[in-house]
Amino acid sequence: MNASYATLIGALELAQHLHDPDWVIFDCRFDLANPDFGFEAYSREHLPKAFYLDLDEDLSGPKTGTNGRHPLPDPARLAARLAACGVGNHTQVVAYDDAGGMFAARLWWLLRWLGHHRVAVLDGGMQAWCRAAQALTTEVPESHAATYMLALRPCRVDADYVRAHLGKPDMMLIDARSPDRFRGENETLDPVGGHIPGAINRFFRDNLGPDGCFKQASVLREEYGTLLKGHDPHKVVLQCGSGVTACHNLLAMEAAGLPGAQLYAGSWSEWCSDPSRPIATGAG
Image 1 (tube, rainbow, N blue to C red):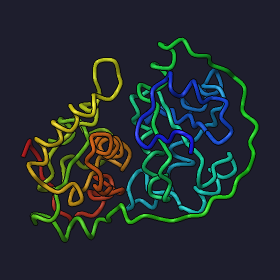
Image 2: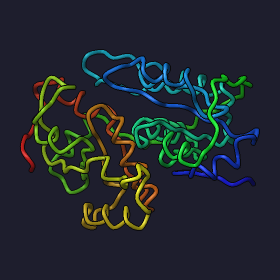
Image 3: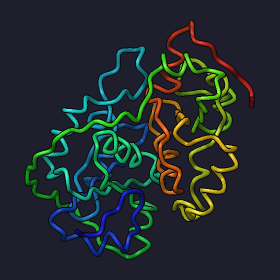
């Protein structure tokens, strides 16, 4: 069996596998303030053999106004999109972006949700690839369609679950947004500021070191251990503004050897769309 990567992969490790036929790479660059940015950046240059996946078009589903800013995509549609790019059930998938894994982690989680284990995020993303003096290209790879069989995993919860478990010891809620947005300040993306009552804050960027790569697994394990205070990771629910950066915290926990946490995909943008749901502000 070839080497299998399930959390992170370094630039030099990926470079050694660029020509492996059972590896598929995805460029997930995106800018929430400029939705055209990602594909334009991909068109200028990207990693060899990389296909582009768009956060809004490929990695999210239709918005209804009450299901959040980035609702989950239809799993069969996503699987078909991936299969069209050559992803089969045993393919090693690598995702990257230029934002410390902020968007690549969404694809990582989605594939885990589909039942796919061989998926990793390029640690340090585009910047790490360039620091390692690796090649870039404008060439769009030729696709060789594969067959993908879904095996959805129960690794997510919905708003009703979160509401039913508020304040109970069997759920620990962690919010990945920046501390100011968590407190209800400087909210520019959602119509209501604040956080879900009882949530604690772990800004996803705290998973990264100064070089934009994930901190060492031992450091992440210590930091999340302090945060969890003995809670079982399987009782942890991770959320953010729209279910994207929460995946970064999920990836960090997995890399730290703390698997089993679940995603509340609708996150704050869904939660605050219903005025009957309670909200909190401030640091606590």
